[in-house]
Structures are given as C-alpha cells and as structure tokens.
Length: 225
Ligand code: CA
Image (cartoon, rainbow, N blue to C red):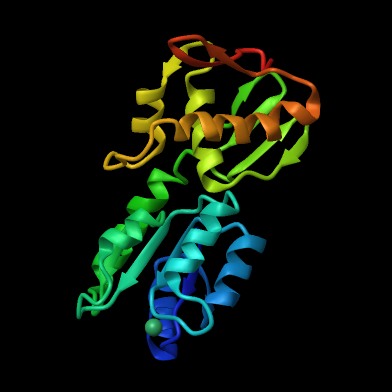
C-alpha cells in the first residue's frame, strides 16, 4: 500500500508517516501543493492524504488538477476545524473523503483502508459518435484524432448532443440541459451556439454531424456525420 501525504505541517506529516508505516504502509511525504501534484502525477499511489491549506498550490487546486489530468487516485482531504473550508467544496472538486483536524489516528487508518478497498473511482467514459470523440474527464474533443478547442459552453452543448446522439433534442431540452435552469434569456442562444459548434466540429472537416430537424430541434448523427 503506497500512500502520499501532502501536508506542510512537518511534525504532523512525520507523525502520520510513522503511524502509517507501523501499519505496513509505504509513505512518501511532501510539504507543498506543487510537489504534491508532481508526485501524484509521476508515481502510482493507492491513496493520497491531502491538506487543504498548502503553500504554493492549495489542496483544492491539487485535486482539481489531478482529476483534470485524468488521475483518479482516491483522495482524503484534511480540512481545518474552523470550518473556513467546507467539505462540500472538497467533494465538488473530486475528493473522495475528508477528515477534520485534529483527527484520531485510528480513524485516519480506517478511512484510508476503506478508500483503498474502494479503489480509484471509475472515470467517466469517453463518448464517441463516429470519429468525433469527447472525453469528459480530460475535457477534450477530437475529430479523427485532431484535437478541437471548445469554450466551456460549446463543450457542454456538444456533451449534451453526443449523450443523446441519434435522437432529436428540442431547444427547451438543450436549454435545460446546458444552460442554468434559471436562464430566462433568448432561447435562440441555442441556435447561435449550434452555429459556433458546427464551425468547429463540422465545417473544417467537411462534415455534417449536427442536423437541424425543422420545427423540432437538433440531432447529432450517430456516426458523427
Ligand atoms: Ca496546512
């Protein structure tokens, strides 16, 4: 069992290392977020213990960046007692569990063992329509292996269309699925964004993936057009 501990309080980090080593785990410690991100990217760990308040790069940013890179090692975050940081934030960003400082060592061990048993969470699967691919975990889109840069909204729209590939989706369905539920602006924004998307995923490749179904909505071709 290999554990990475990212904690800038040196004495706490060393105490954790000794304790986990006594349980037969192999433990590396680093003392700032940048080193933590590097270590977690370069070496395979079974689990990562990650403090939130870290020099150079916060624990939030570390876990967010790891998930963006497609690294799904389970993360247990250490949160401050004062509640300055909400554990909800940690979960939102991709942490798997959290522990509030000061914590009981026995609880830490139990939680780590539970995380290791559970293993890395399954990463979201890459969606494909023919040679058009969308990787939700890495937030990448490609056509025939050629990477396409999309804005977050364009990405969200393509993700919606590709999940419903082969089916007609209406403008209200697209609005509800891609824009905030509170969005009450012009519904023609869908049309505008479909246009942007076509100019990126279809036009340069001389393809027609997004079909306008008159009076109904849009359909992304199963085979990518
Ligand atoms: Ca700290």
